[in-house]
Image (cartoon, rainbow, N blue to C red; front, side):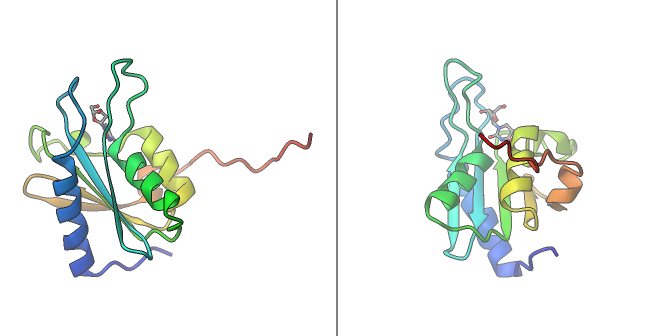
Length: 143
Ligand code: THU
């Protein structure tokens, strides 16, 4: 069942994601992303953290989810994502989370609502909508 998120908490999450994006470390793409995660303890934030090797770049959503997990905040009801350097709201695809982040969401907060912040619009998705068939490890190999 999808988590209920109040309008006030939605607004706080959006503001936190937009503010976090200002601190993004994105010297290569210059595409700053901020994310905020609402857990039982409150709001955790993250930004994208790029690396000269490119492939080691960490997305904002996973940074924010890692912050929540690192604080022991396991019950996540919402994530807001703000790509403040995106071209505009016409093409949503530049604002959506990448596949790796969707897989993290499927594991860590399957019932959370995902709030996509455009410059002038807000779109809400379920994790199921973003990743209908996630990988799940059902078989544990015994040593
Ligand atoms: N990025 C994110 O932070 N989240 C996503 O889901 C998509 C992409 C970052 C990674 C990189 O620093 C920049 O956006 C351009 O791809």
